[in-house]
Image 1: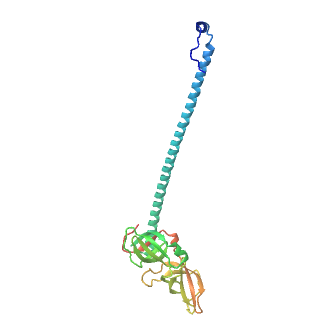
Image 2: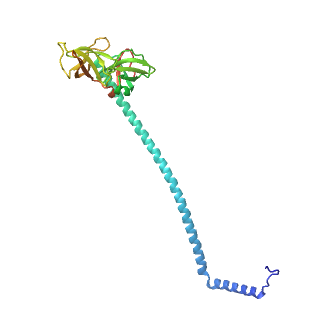
Image 3: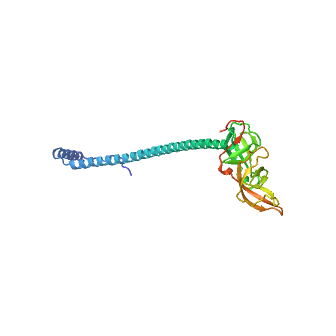
Amino acid sequence: MARSTPTYTPVRNYAISFFLSALLLFSDISYGAFAPLRGFVTASTLYAQMISRGIFEGISATFSSFHANKNLIQENKELKEQILKIRTTDFINKKDNQEKIQIINFHKDLINSLKNKDVAIYEIASIDLRNYLCCSTHRIFLRNDENVSVGKNSPVFAGESFIGQIKDSYLNFIEVILFSDFNHVLPIKSNFLYCDAKGKGKPMLISCKVNKTNKNFNYQIGDTVYTSGLGGIFLKDIEIGFISAIDSFSIDEVEVLITLKANPLEETFYGIMGEEADEI
């Protein structure tokens, strides 16, 4: 239960407290009695300040280091991107220079082979690879960015030989039917035959049916095959390929298989004779 009246403190107690305080103060001032204690308190305060300062400096250094690392990572990323751009640009420039040299050389070879300076150069856009490898329809598509007019059925040259002829043109593309297309027919000749070779519907193969009773017929596998010039489309005496096999077809006939010289899967540029200027 709380007391209702304050407790009385005798005056002597205050006197004694005052006297002891004065005595302690006098002892400290005169003899430095509490100097070690004050030094301890001061040192403790200084240590506490040093520790807290070290902690804050460590935290600050950590954040600074993190920020610096972040900046370094960003700078490293930007440098890598710049290096990649430089390498890409260098690759494109080298590729362009190589393609220009390739085009120039190809054009010179075409002029020498075809004896005609009016040859336009076109770059391949795509090949119907699925049908080319498995089926009878063999077509490629050439880029015609300037939409240059080309003659339908004009012969198409690639590598060191003819490879097909123009089927159609639309938008910015030229469709070329290859010799190996099942629906294509090419007049050819060799040392012992003249015939209209038909596409086999298989990559780089055409064939002729030859009568065994033909007195000029010889089993000459490896013989070179040329364009005959008949039909008025393809120049005469251009090497097309070679006889790779001779198979029996019937009692009186054999099938002469011819492997073509030009491979559309290995060519990038194609030549077309005509009145138009070069396309590349």
